[in-house]
Image 1 (cartoon, one colour):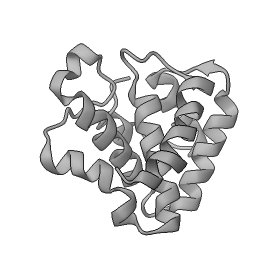
Image 2 (cartoon, helix red, strand yellow):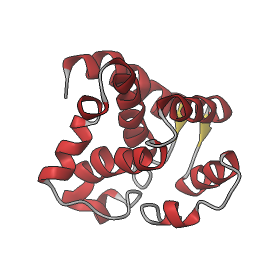
Image 3 (cartoon, helix red, strand yellow):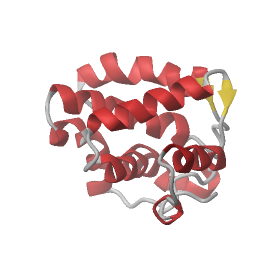
Length: 148
């Protein structure tokens, strides 16, 4: 992890997606950890480039096996927990937004934060919000990495 990523992205965004928008950490850790990593990478993409921005997540995917489903319990994910939550979940989000661009991704993340401040969100609620936001059936994409 780059020092700048940790100081400028990870720490402040962790407050967004764990403290302000909370979740069940045992089963839905990806909602804070994965979204924090994803949003940090979006910031770094704007500042540097995609390769550098997503290097932390890509490192996990390159050198570790992951679970296909990112929102399993800690027991379910076991040794796959870290590469799945920090690698697969941000990269699946980027898979969706890569063609749309970082501005649309940041707009979505900002609106998600604004709409769910001081709430506890589940994976199912996130998936519903995602589908509503993009006004269409996204279940094929979402079910490829979320169990909801």
